[in-house]
Structures are given as C-alpha cells and as structure tokens.
Image (cartoon, rainbow, N blue to C red; front, side):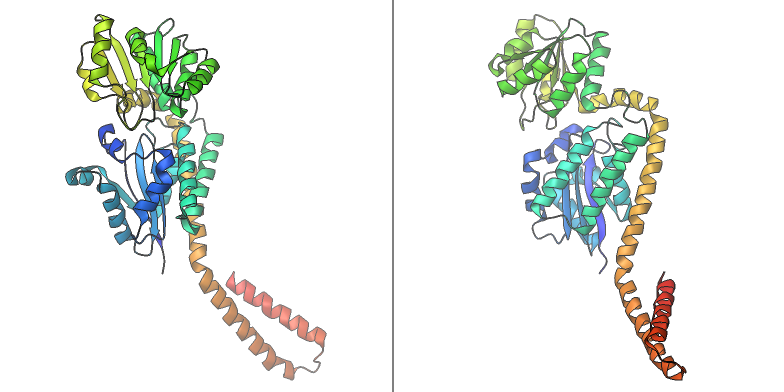
Length: 390
C-alpha cells in the first residue's frame, strides 16, 4: 500500500508566541517527546521540529487522512480546542515535501535567510533517527531538504545582510537608541541564540555584559565578544544598570518576573529599560511590560524589522523558490521510481520469460545451432527487453 506524507503544526504565521511556547520542546527532549507522541498512533515514520518560530510533526502513513487527524490530536492536547482549530495547519503529499524544503532553506522563517533553522532541522532529524522513527521516505525527504538548503545558500544571496533573530533583535535595539555605542547591554543567556546576539552586538560598540547560569560559559562568550561576564546572582544589579536587555535563555519558566523587576524599577529611578525577549518559551513575564518605564518586545515584535530586511533580498528569495521547485520535482521523480520498482521487476521477469520461450522456439529452426549463435540470440533478446522496459 502506498504511503504518503503529512505535516501538522503551527508557526509564527499562524500563532503568537504565547501559543507557540505551549508546544515548544527543548532540543534535549526532542527524542523522548517524539517517542511519547508516536506511541501507537499508526505512523510509519515520524519527526518533530521545535524552534522559536514553529513546532511541526511530520509523518508518513498508508492512511494519510487518519494520520493527519492523529498528528493534530497529538499537538492539540496542549492547546485549548478553539485555539487548536485556529492555529494548527496541515499539509499532505507533495505539499509536505515543498514545505520542508522551504523550511530548511529558511524561506518560511521569521527572518528569511537566517542560518539557524537548518541546524535546528538537522537536530530534529538526528533525534528522530535516535528514536528509530525515520525510514526510507522521511530519510530521503529530509536529506534532500538539507541539500536544497545548501544550494540556496551557495547559489543565491539570500543570506546576505541581517539574517538571524538575534541580529534582528540587535537591529531593533539600534533603532531604539540610534546608536548603541557606549550603551550598556545585558545579555541573558550564553546558548546558541545568545552567542549569535553577542556576535552582532560586538560590531555596535556597546558595553556588553553577559549573565548565564553557567558562569564558565558566560566568561567564554564574553571573552570572545569583548564583553564582561557577570555572576548569575548579580542579575538584579545588572538589570538596574542596563539600557538594553536581550533575553535568550533556554529556561522553561519566566526569568524576569514582576516580583524581580519591582525592585529593579525602583532603583532605576524612572530611567527607561528596553527588554528584547527572543526566547521561546519566553524569558520575560508579559506583565513586566506593564511596569513603569519598562518596554518589552518579544520575538513576534521583530516582524516589522524582519520584513524591512526581506524587501532587500526579495529577488534572491524568488531565485531560492525556483531552486526549491527544482528539488521538489527531483524528489517526486525519485518517489515515483520507488513506487514503480515492483512493477518494473515483475515486467522484467515476464519479458525475460517471453524472450527465453521465443529463443527455444526459434533455435530448432536454424541450420546452425552453435553456442556462438545461441549467445548472439540471447544478447539480442536481452537488448530488446531492456529497450522495451526503458
């Protein structure tokens, strides 16, 4: 029975960050989460992607309609019913292939051209392999998605300019102040997002301070970017002195709460504080944005800056879309050849039988029945069969 692809998920295009974070899965939890989701849901293969801008469950099944319903149910369990119907989308068949190729190539990202998504998709693929839920179809689909992303990056200029959520956050900070030189910027988190933000901030001349639960990691990042590491216990003091805060930790809970910020706001004496939260789940309790002189931006607020950035690279994006379509067609051709393989094998066997029968019927009628004559006729028979099959 023919198997087909399905994907069910949500992204920055369909759901705000406060909904996306309900489904977010930490990288180290992907494999276990996938095992729990798959269970006995009837998927032949499955893969789960979770980033700050999307959570998507991919699967293959001989009954794709039922698989899509099952995948939707798996994700909807953490959402309110009305919420699930509004924000979850699903695709089937070739549209899934096109979708994953566009995702891996960063054509469906909040910041088109950002490089982080490819690494995140590869992490999801590795987790699915470790969980034993990837087989021939998803394996080939995602492997070709990685190759497509490489082509897009090598053959277009889509990655030129500001191309990551972290760098867009820094662009927003510069828009707020006009110039970050001499300003004090506090970076909360020294993971992948924090490292990307630190690299962008290094070019601005800001006075960078890094806070992380692992002080050794904070020191390493600060040293690489000309900043200063600060013990986690001094975070309140740093918040009181900062002009801009960029929060990018992997904490499942809010780091900046109204309780913590009450004392910070009091000690700042009406100086404004700008907080840019690029973490999902969020690091900053949204109630903090209601406090006096505290201005909070989350990852969804970066959309306007990202759209300005995209307009510069619109032509490159169009070229990237053409590459995606070429690769989708290539994949579908491979898929069709896979489905035809059993038929071709059966035809080859039957044609071979017919050729042998005709050979046995013809040989007695020949004046000469030498091994050389027989070999010539057998070769001719094979050639005819091959040409007919081709």
